[in-house]
Length: 326
Image 1 (cartoon, rainbow, N blue to C red):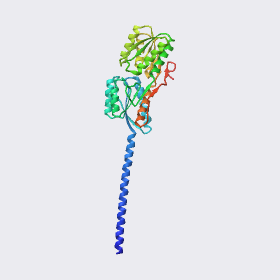
Image 2 (cartoon, one colour):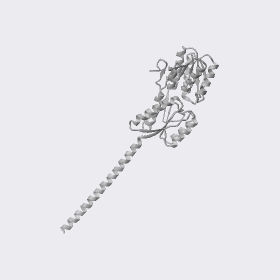
Image 3 (cartoon, one colour):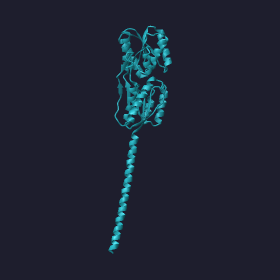
Image 4 (cartoon, rainbow, N blue to C red):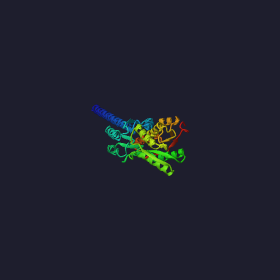
């Protein structure tokens, strides 16, 4: 009888051990699955996707914007945060930029960082992106609707500096041709308006020409016509690299070698024009690389759940023949 009791007790203890081991095994699998899910979640958080779009890939400043963007992406990659960047070339056409942004939204990018070609025309595309929970950060130009952040430069300050350079170069007297742009291109309009205000306040004569075409050749023709109509023009203020280089080419074509061209953007082409002693007299370095970096970083921070705000860059240098190689 005792032996039979001992056998039953041994059997019960063995069954309890098996149950205990099974329970432990089950808990281990659950813990393992939970850990795996957490790791996947963490991994997903470090993989971000943004679309980075400038005015046009043919614009010299686009190279600087994209260099700044890539530098930012590389810096975050070094921190273990990988960013997939997509892009398209709107070719200076707002309708192409609208359709391109709509396409990016349909591809489920998490953020769009772009320079609006037309502040009004891009409103519907931005609203569509925001409705799809896509982060939107604009740079250089603004768009006339709510975005997560706008990264710009103080274009009025740039225009004022160009006007002051014209006053300095001409010794406070003379006639200046200022290139203007349609009001929809807000940043350029701010530059030309500020330059004109400074020139008029200094008692300088001002004439204007409208550059509403996206090609340097057409801008050159418009400026050349203005120079032919007024031989007293002594300086040209451009609103961007293309209009400024168009001013150099137009004045050279007219054999007006004493004209001083003042540019708001520094690029390799502009540096070469200064070094070669052409009519490019003075340039405001608006630091487009920094603009591309800051805009990209702002979008990344927003995607990572950080607070972001608008940024206005205003630390500019003046480049002339005296310091172009420094």
